[in-house]
Image (cartoon, rainbow, N blue to C red; front, side, top):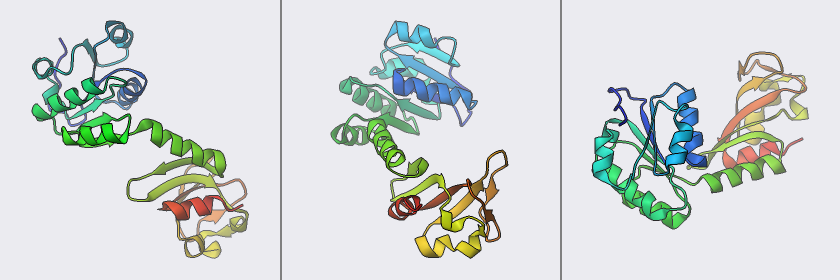
Length: 223
């Protein structure tokens, strides 16, 4: 039987320890969070026994089982169940009935996502679609990393354009010309430098840039 956490606000129950759920659980543990991993597959549970704070085999579509495991005492729950849509939806519904305050759920399609939202998920993620879009940006441009938010806003790491080399941010006026904000500059073997008007740009510098997605994309395409 898993031990329910204390009232820590960073405790997380991860349900479904496949590729997505397992990656989330492992990253959470690495970040110092109290994690309960749950899966119906005994072999999968055993493989995670030494890597998670707590791990247990259980049918998570049963609200009574979740209550006995103390899942309702966790601050967050992540449902990473993959191909079994019925189990995914019933698990979210059970978590919602238990009053879990913050439920994240993986969706396989837009329709699946809408059902998850209606059954109680507070956040629905589409990992395949998100990763596909991210990879497309990295493959086709100068972007080294790309994160897009739901409201059409993005943050990217990209190489500084040639026009900025040897000038300060104020002198090259990237915000005025491209409509983006340089959050900071990262130079090889040096610390991250916040983007200020007097910050110099050198050849080989990486820029952390934020702004509307289309403007950020256009800026990243500049050579």
